[in-house]
Length: 199
Image (cartoon, rainbow, N blue to C red; front, side, top):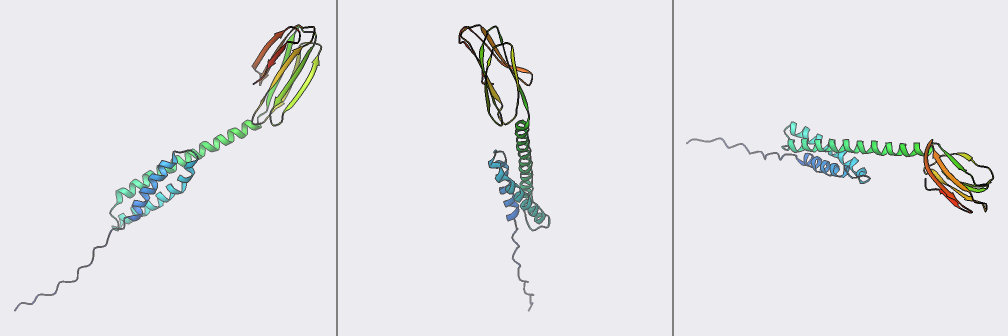
């Protein structure tokens, strides 16, 4: 009678550990989508970083034969890296925008108010906007008249209003900012108004 050796016990097959590679892909995709949206894209930073970490661990596990989704983990790493690049670009854009705004706020603008004409008298009112607002009024008995003002701030501008006297005549207002003419107007007659504003 032939005796057979008993079969050795079958070992249960080790299940592949695909969780982190899949998680890296999913988190990377979500981070990539969010990275395109201004302001909301701030949430993308931790997502793409987690996507990179999870995907890298998934690739390492696949390399050791403990996972079977190496392709998905690589895709997760790629989309996470692309999302990270977009986040970095957005951060650079925002940083430049903030620097430009601060630079503009600190930039000094030179505003020159000018009045010419043949009116014997005129009331001149000039207002300047900047980090502070100033308003001045003068009665001018001799034309031409010029006033130079320097200002800085987030919003720069002002207005120049000339009103002729009872004797009439003509007046012309002109405003230049940093050497460029931005506004001019002419009026004639008694109590006529020439307005150079909204610049």
